[in-house]
Image (cartoon, rainbow, N blue to C red; front, top):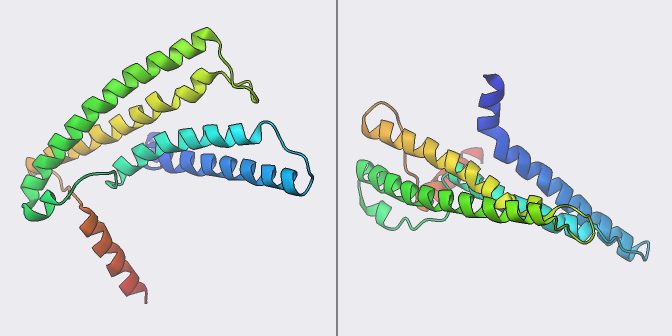
Length: 182
């Protein structure tokens, strides 16, 4: 159970850190080889690009987990907390439906590319693995959305605490933290 709890709390952060390190190292190595050694690597830019693609899709899940995904929260500033939660549930259900569609169609495309055997030019990685970033990222996003919807419903029932945060709330929290550190 500790492993599952750790994965729930840290899977996105861990993947994002690893992908960022690999991407940055690859680009740094390419710059070194090109400008210091006067020779370039054929695979480094491709590796960095594929890491970036995976980073974007895993980052969507992280944004949902932290409640910092893109949303229009002007309306949320004028309504009470219970109404915010209802709006949050509706928005998360719409986002979940979209995510499930992306998972299905993204997986079909990735599977098709794997069946065709198409590989990348420099790394010779099956392109289906690169395209698999979309369904994997949105599967993680769906899990995070379901977790939020459950918390929101439990909050409406009075069994849990969940606060729908707006961008204004995040800014105020950061300002408060900065003020207390000084």
